[in-house]
Image (tube, rainbow, N blue to C red; front, side, top):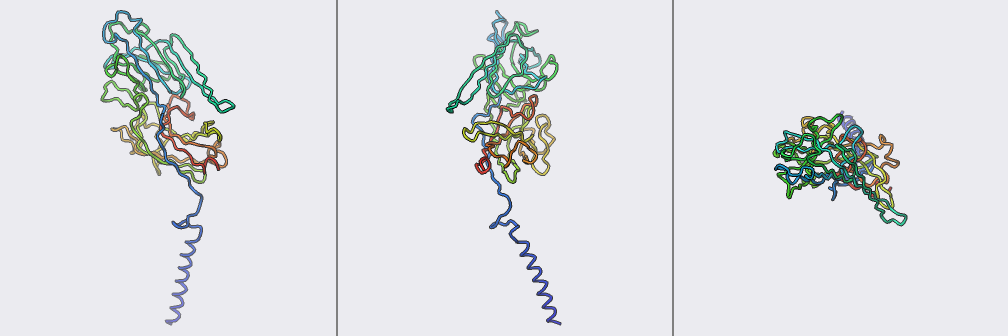
Length: 365
């Protein structure tokens, strides 16, 4: 009886041991013997030049006093690297009093300077500047990473603005549809006379508010004060991005991901691949498209500090025809971009907030 019990025990124990050994076969990944597809990672870094909208605002010299010659009291706005807008949306310039309770829509002359760079047969850069001037405009929609717009107006060109009105604020708004008597809520760029030196101040980009204490400055003349951080991994044709510590987008903007295809010889960008809108972390992955106006969509948004604590994205090459085969071959970069909601979605905007360089194992294999 005892002997039979021992044999049964041995048999059962042996079966358990075989089961354990089977579980540890070469198809199971362990620390010393990993298996499965290789993953390749890269860290994100903040570009030297983010191309966030920047520029200057110049006030009339006699802005706070009755003007002796209103026609010569120039209001000059320069706007650099703002995106081109979709049909039906425009940029509009406004003058306002100190408390931003009275607004005057400005009409003036617009000069658009564009610089295109190509490469000669010998590999040398060919720079082609183009300048276009339009007179008597009250809105425009042109922009781009290589475009500088200069808008010049005066007191007499603004309906209702008299020689005795004080001009304490100049701001730019984005208008979709008919333009009303006051700017829309997308008041993305501005300058205050109280912050000006010699009648000129840097353009503030963000979300304007009548009181300085309530405004949100994303960048001052292109300089973003927050530094995000993050990392991506490419494995089995899937890109996973995990990053954190971003400013909330200004009203009218959202974050997106783009992969950039480059020429294998010159490393120059030749195409882009839209990887989608940013989302909150796994497992919820809630779209953060409305994070500019809604801080309740996800607990990762800290409204009081205008900060997004964490973001995450997952993009699979089998749903992206332009990803190529092998997936992402010759794609050199992945960019986190700040996109204008009034611009065509899917087209990479000028503002690159963070960038990761894909390793040779991905781009060149």
